[in-house]
Length: 59
Image (cartoon, rainbow, N blue to C red; front, top):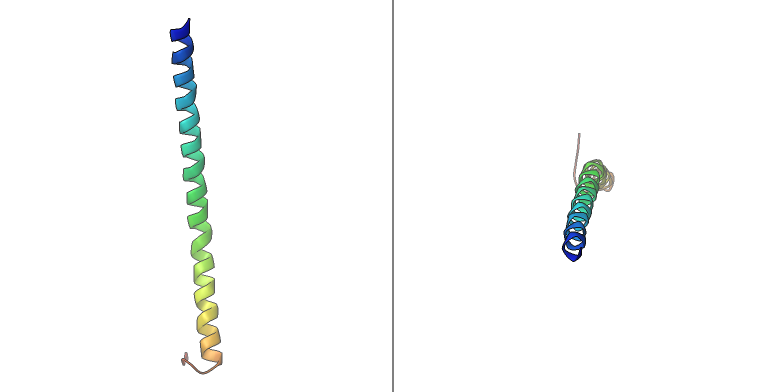
């Protein structure tokens, strides 16, 4: 009986690790998808601000 409980415990622990791994991967993917538009927007605002103050000239 102890061996069966031990095997079940290991199986559920592996399932839990797989679920946590998938959640982490999905979170990282979502973060990457959100970050690119945010970074592009910040770079645009920086260029616009520097252009407005005459630091750089964009035609």
